[in-house]
Length: 383
Image 1 (cartoon, rainbow, N blue to C red):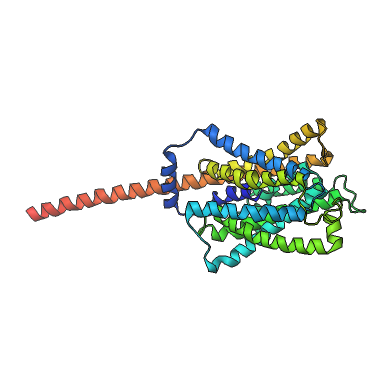
Image 2: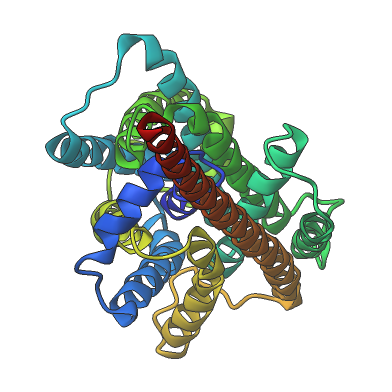
């Protein structure tokens, strides 16, 4: 769910902007502000759609090449997002910035490839449980690059979150035999790391392009890389048998009927629908609020999986094991980071207000002083 984390950080203090632009933007937003229930509803619905995507994707790649699934998703979602971004902003990439889109596209490619292959090998609920760790990874990398301060709350949150992630990966995993569940969890780690690196590398071009344009063009670059991965995977038998051991013979490039509905869901709902909801909701909500709703993803996946399994429509869905409890550590760690971000935002706001107050007082003092000098001048002139 690159879109969810990207929207959270593209609107936060992580992406710097001038205070004057922020004030103009805030004045515009204050007019015609929608109901808070609509804003919260949009953000909640977006996370529910993301959470449902794990289950839908698990069902959609049954007996289907997951790399081909990712290639079709990115190849169609990218042009749609680019068209929407161009219609809204009328901006095309500057040739000097193409290499930035190659880098961001590389990390989207890694993110999507690891996620879809991981979900083929592992559990859909565990896949969703990993997603909140993306914000933790972004914070950890930003601290390492000295883009953010290493506060006690952030450090504690990072350690707790990674402790929870390690519990998800290693509890009950048959490491000696290299189980598919363990392999899937390792891929989820690199899936989330790919998202974090994408956000970090996209930061410098946020000042040139809106988030939708960056995502759309990065998706197009990623789809080209995914096409190459498809060609390699389908022609190297060992790779193909690893990622698609349940695929029928002669079906390397065939799209089964069960995958069509999953592709429609991922392209129209996950990539486009959720992105629009996040974009609209982010105009009126704090960035930390966007991150705070990410735990809804594993909750949605767990509830949806339970309902489908109880209804007898299982496919390859399985209920998570004890290791899913590691998500609690990720949630607690995320809560520490969000709390620290909100505290820093309040301090920055107080500092801005203090500077504005001082500036107004200085101007008033200068005006009164100027008036006093004028009076003295006229008295001397009269004498």
